[in-house]
Length: 299
Image (cartoon, rainbow, N blue to C red; front, side, top):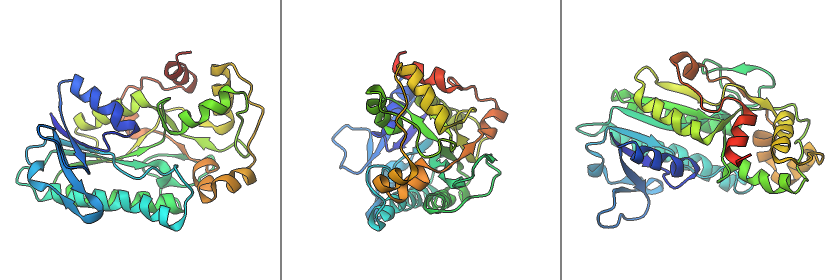
């Protein structure tokens, strides 16, 4: 296939593009810089509402991953606007542009997040569950709705509700490694909050599966089938690294350090089941946390 990928230099995109190209697919990157001569890339400026629509003709599929990193700085009003707008404006621009093509692609896999469900305690959540409340929920709802123009053009849209992506190359796990290796890691808050995670190889596998599985459309939970509590995650990471995990971060300390982000990212409990992936036959490479961590960390 000829596949357009946005966010191709991010944590997921950096793993996805080599996987696709070694599998024989042709990848075109959607980038903000002007493409160099001979570069397989399409220029866009989502904030300005600009995209080179002519260069989108002839695509078979689109994987849309672009968006402001949600965990790089405190959630000031300006930062929250950047997080939301980078997802909603970009997705709407891309979906509308694809819908106007003479030959639109057959499928668009668009990133979303399990933040859609909000803080739900021990409730087991599937794609049929109602949305929660809060900034992340509102952002995810608008993000998914922004892809509607593509759906209306009969492009098969898959909204991948991603859990916490585990990779030593970036994201949550990479930030945890130094304190845990130093023996100063520990649970956050009560430790009872659920963490729905997915290993980076399975993220890539799920995206490829979504591209090639016609029955998948709409929301798809991209999480491993065995969510764990923060306490379980902490103990497992400590065991894999052979380090103690006796330095907890109380909830008040998390809120002092991270502000509103702490309540929605660190202290919220979201226990998610990948029902549609399991029902359609997807095979998880790393369904259990300890095996996933040992694979990622070479332990």
